[in-house]
Image (cartoon, one colour):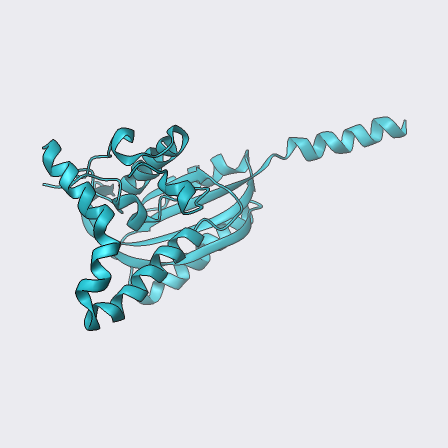
Length: 167
Length: 66
């Protein structure tokens, strides 16, 4: 009897398949800058309402888009060249994530969003490394431009030359 | 670039938000470089490709540079 009970508990915990997801999204630039924290908070509440546990996130900030996107809202096609880009990482039941997607599909504030499976570890560690490099570069550029720029750009220059030769 | 960039820099998960890194693997037209040119391992090249495609979808990287 006891064994049976234990098995049941295991089944329940296995049934709830928790995975790490990342939601990247673009909010329409028509939203006023003051209201961004509101929609950001709403999203957080939405994720937690679906039983999601936030790991990390970033407040949406205005970015220029690499190409213009269009979205039809209420039979009007809107074109966007800028958007608020934000992301959040959370642990959620794999069954609930579809419901979250359906919910987000109906939200007109989002231009686009992307739900990805990811890892719990901080993946932006690499980004910091790169950023640190670029921060270091900035002050040196002013003083000694030629000495610092040459060793850093070697790979890029090589690649550019390769690309030019290929074309 | 013969050595794998990602193992050299100890990057285990290629993130679509790291556009500064991803840009290194695009040619001037915005196309993804072949693994021959990038020197990245097959596994990382697959991860790199999907990261670039995710970044493109969210407007962080261009599909085409004219």
